[in-house]
View 1 (tube, helix red, strand yellow):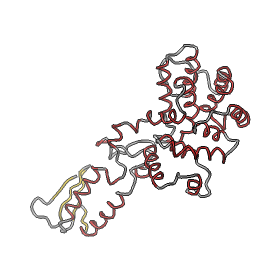
View 2 (spheres, one colour):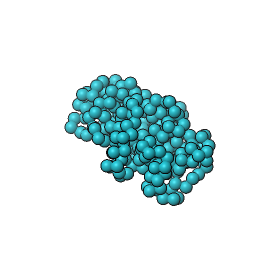
View 3 (cartoon, helix red, strand yellow):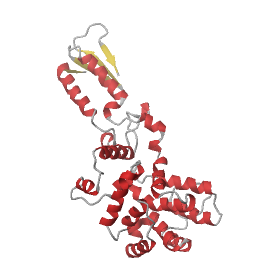
View 4 (cartoon, helix red, strand yellow):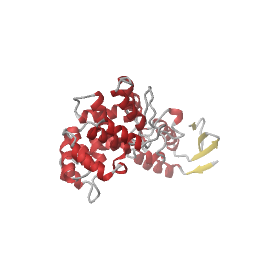
Length: 319
């Protein structure tokens, strides 16, 4: 049994609630990047806001503040830091292509002789420069561009034979074994892409595999591997969506992410102060404290009993 001064606790609670109203209900609050919920959330089927959802909110806020109005404004927002190309990709995914397009072109001009500059030009609406891409792939190798983008580049530059050889050199036989069912891994996806051209896989299966790849997050519900989806998106357009603008293809990624379904959006609680079970418990505590007769906490297992230190009849609450 613990006894406390109700006025001091009430003051502290007010400050706590104020802080909760501005504290994102995200990874830093839940203390883990590996799971969408913490034990106290699970009975209520609540999720902490994912890094992807936080990205959506942050992007919208920066747009409102004019951060992306021009190249100079955007660069100034990052000081002396290196140029974060992933931020421009997130801008496109979240539906702000017209704002992103001049920045993508400026980024490509500011970072010549880099693979990201070639992808930026393509995403802005230009044809992929195959000669420049070939030179960069030869110079930088697989470790610089990754298997996901490297295969698509090999396919774009030299065709399916070169892409087949590239896949064989950079994956094991088991990794690229052909499956007639939807898959998510890059080697299996690309093996299906090669089989599709020969009529060995159904278009509906390949489409589901691409969408599974688009929805895959290397870190839990995080956009950290977004740049690795440039190659798969390019190949998706080449095989299944010819004529579709690159930015529309790239925006398909968001459609494949589970945290942006209607159900998840309806359950989303942006700030800690919006989590009903948590706030309800605090309101019970505030109700007892408002009587200003002191407070006693009786803890028994998972039940906490709040009792006035100077009780009248039925002056107790539970949560």
